[in-house]
Amino acid sequence: TAWSLPGAAVRTWSVCGDGLRHSDEDCDVGAAPDSASANGCIQCSATVGYACVGGSASVKDTCGAGCGDGGKNGIEECDDDANVNGDGCDASCRLETGWACASNEAGGLTSGCATTCGDGVKAGVEECDSGSDNSDTGHGCRADCTMAATAVCTENEAQLSTCRLCGNGKREAGETCDDSFSSGGCLLAGACQATTPGYLCSGGDLATADKCVSGPATAPAPVMSTATTSSLTFTWTAPDARGLVMARYELAWEAVSGVTSGNTSGVATGAGTTTLLKITSLAAAPAMYRAQVRGCTTAGCGTYSPWSPGAAITAKAATESLTAMASVITQDPKLLVTGLDVTVGNITSKAPEPEPVAPTSANDASVINETAILLANLPAPVVVVVPDPTTSTTPAATTTPAETSIVEEETTSTPAPVVEVTTTPTAAVPTTPTVAVPTTTPVALPTTP
Image (cartoon, rainbow, N blue to C red):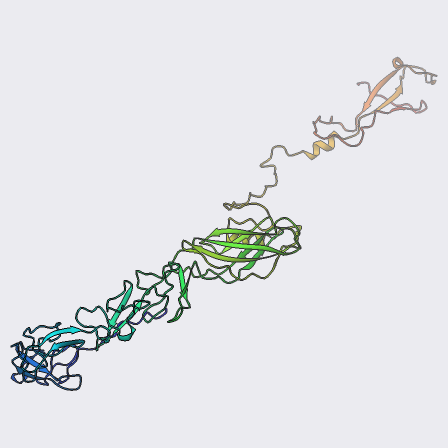
């Protein structure tokens, strides 16, 4: 991730007794902190009644008794008979930085001490002092050394104040944004060190205000993933929501070519949890469309992405590929199945029906008896007419039924069984023929019919 803002400047503790007085020490005479030689400067703090003067980050202090008796004597820089800090003459009888005393004569009482606002040293009741930079306009430290309401000031060892003013339209040291509170994107409560979730602030410097915009970052151009005869599906990479949850996506589309009327443009809306949208009811091939997308959060909508390359509607096919359908359904089951205007809400699988079993004599009582069919279709019996032996052998001119007898000659000695067949033979059953037997060839007839 990106680096954080720098923290305030810090330093290690001084070494008491090294003869070097630093800002966290009241005095340092270069002796062991608790030794007798540390007279007047015990644990690097001046003993009440002693004056310790002359010390710095490169020189040790010199201490002497008599501080606080109301008379400036010896090594004392001042003596206001108070032995306290913050009044111009501190508890060690030293003049405090940023103060000036009206009366401070040798042997006399130091009095009339006051700070000087604008000298670049924060002292006394001053809230800040940036020296000549103090200003009532656009600066954190006002001309009277008080801090502006939205100012943040820090001091160095010399007590010079460095201030920044949140809301002055300048991104100063220590600020991450400053747009003069024009958008709500730069947090006043955060002293211009944080942006409001869902915003991006950029472009600010010491002379220029930031520009803060709401909404997610700009997404890359969408790409077409699936085309049918009346729809196009586009997908894209999710952009940065800038600290918020994506609420929705808006996909704007327009016809590029092949469309003269009807659906030539529009905006489709989808949930913020998906990066895929399908545009339906489009013109047939050879229509071509393009699309651009943007994300929206509770802070607002981002800017639209670049346009996608043109995407063409597919020509209507005689059959639809099951593989293509499965591909679209895999992406989102609620999408229209490729090529079919059917909304798929839930897809379930079902085992195929079992294959039919061929009938056998064991499992089907209606098996046809082929022998019965053959017998049922045999020709009908032949009828032969012969003369009566008791009559004349001379052929008569005419014959009557009384003069003849009928004998049936069976084609088989066993009568044919009668079987009912469900089908009707295509060939007509022959009628019974009547054959006349010549009289010159007698036929012996059995006596028993």
